[in-house]
Length: 426
View 1 (cartoon, rainbow, N blue to C red):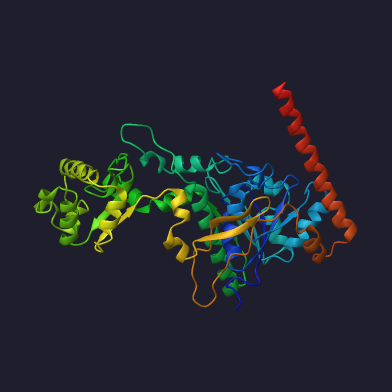
View 2 (view 1 turned 45 degrees about the horizontal axis):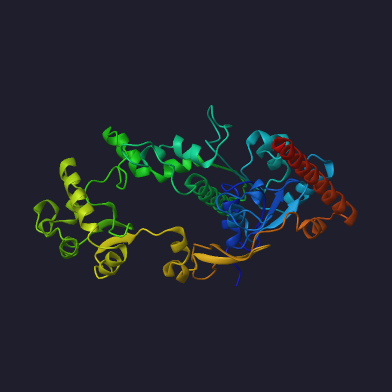
């Protein structure tokens, strides 16, 4: 059975996460994704990050996560033959996808105007940090910068401390989601109208999308909300995270029946709040009409209640309350073993050279008739040069020239890095 994007070819020139993760989604849904890399490759290939005991030279975890199943072509676009190779691949593509800066794409002859004139059916999909217009359109971005600019960082952390960086790169990954969504929208529009178009999204814009309710609340009311630590800044009452006797944590979101609320209060030894009229409806328990003083009071009571049992004991008890919305806070190692995620194939396994089988996030969208699938591990740098450039009409001698040029540039770059490192150490 064909997958939903079977027959779609994507030429991707990306680094880091925001671009590659968009290409990953298209690949999972059946598109062929060709990752065109410069001689040294995507820098993420070499990222070690924190506490990484894998052998030296192993692909970086971030690269593995967002590049599985793709093909890699490695070339030097500063050469005429390298540029011809990219154009040959684009001639057979449906989408050009990139998170390179706009001025860099234009310099390489890969800007929207140049490519649209040359390939009128090619969709040109790009993502940047702060949007395609305005004074900061070309400003450099890493994940935290977008989260800070978009306001989410200001609401994350303790009220009596500095803002805290979220524990995941939600600026980059959410930007990738918008890029994939925009690309699919443009593909559908091309099918209906025959017109290919430019797709532009940004990490900043995506941050605003993630905060639509909170930003609209501020705009409508003029409220200046504040960080609330383990609680949401725009929700009063019980909603929040509470530490347990063992040092674990439980998030309580809502109790939809009085019986569930009563049971929690009794189990936590705060039975007096089971009969308190201030909390006797779901709306009241979600903060409707609640004063800040009352909110503080019930939170203190629940903090005391949750310390009466361990996280495992609360987990066992709360599973008997189907009308309570809650979750035990899980660590990343626990998430990788979560039977719910495993049952839905949210966690998959791919082969990584030098390491072997590695778990990573799988295909998250389930389609009943044309489901997508995981297409294997991440590509070695330039592994598809011979096959894909051969199919594009290049001779063996030309392919060898392209590959050797990339190899020599890469070796020279790595030698310079090594020499600089030795000089620093001396």
